[in-house]
Length: 500
Ligand code: FAD
Image (cartoon, rainbow, N blue to C red; front, side, top):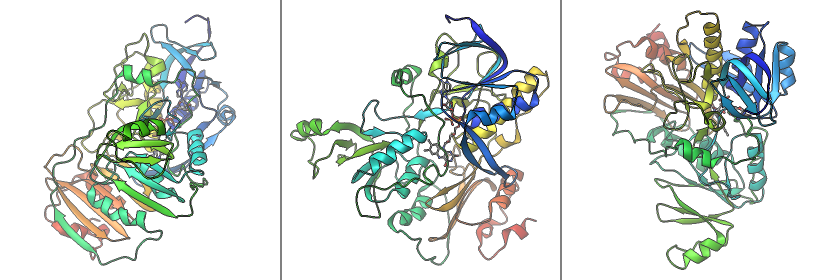
């Protein structure tokens, strides 16, 4: 690092997303007379508002983009530095920012988030959605589009295909069913009619079934090495903003150039073979590719042999943690998907460096009912817990892993249905050692319970089921439910009363 250290702070937090801001709030209020700094690249910070603890582990909140001044006014001991961190030297405990300033720290927390794992870099016809800027770019391109191809099967793709109007959407997923990150094939089947109809269908009679599953799909996601990752960085590119979250499309008209309402078709079990410009397509189609009708600026060749022309491609195939500026010259342990490995105190492998949110990978021995997913709620929980751990470290106090890491829980909305996910909701890691109970009322609710050795270990609740608290308790107390069998989901039994 060339320049002199401008100032040394007791605590430095990098990143103004949910994780970073929550960590800042924790530390600035706990240590009002210590110097705290937030260094962030994006133009705004993300603040949690309307926080509501729905049950022991379920929480709901809104997130608002706010100017830095809001935080600084609240915490006089906080300095916000608006610049991207360019490099970190963990031995001398200092960071250099893109504008050439150097800051020292006693304790550092990296909350730099993640960015879309784009199918290809620098292709103007391939868009990722991450922050406000990229969502606006998507909206702009969409307004002129007649057909788009969406690649990916996670939450962003799910929301996108549902929200887009006035444009044909071809959705390519690598799995046998849509929404594989969140659902099994049964839930996908429940949701599919929502893509076809503009209005929810009339509720049909209740159906209940019990079965055991086939072997779960192995996760075929590509793993990036640190090297691949850094090659993917755009030097001098736009500073990354914070990740959007639920309802990122609210207030944004996602409308294409056509007069159609929703028009979605799904290509299952395929991945992208290559992306071609119209010129490349013309050259190659003479040899091997089947011609697509019409002329499009970009073509996507899928592994199922189809080549589809479209106005642009949305790459929604997951994220890569933003670790690159912090790695050079240091000794961070990285996880397979390149997150900074953290232990049960959210400490990285470098002394005095913590990490929280999308940038980190939880590498402690997890509770059997919890898994990391790069979601808003976990970013908030990790930011908050990292702040507490840093404080405990400074005060030499012991601290135990927070209760929120006991049970995975997430509330969201897909296709306008309330969705609650609890524990091992997709029987993750259970192999064949589980059975499922399902209750489904078409157009109204889908309830799935995952049982292992007679105990509830996970659940998917779609619709207004009102069962989340009861199921959360049943999962947390690990009561033996063998005696109840299918009655657990009997719609004529008020299960809440049953377990009171
Ligand atoms: P971020 O919010 O990404 O914040 C990272 C911060 O670090 C930013 O302020 C950025 O400017 C800053 N930064 C990055 N690099 C540097 C650097 N070198 N120097 C300084 N600062 C830097 N989650 C849900 O739970 N539900 C949803 O429905 C949902 N929908 C989503 C929809 C979209 C389109 C996207 C993109 C994500 C969605 N997520 C959702 C995921 C959720 O938004 C993220 O998990 C969460 O915001 C991560 O928070 P974070 O604080 O770790 O990172």
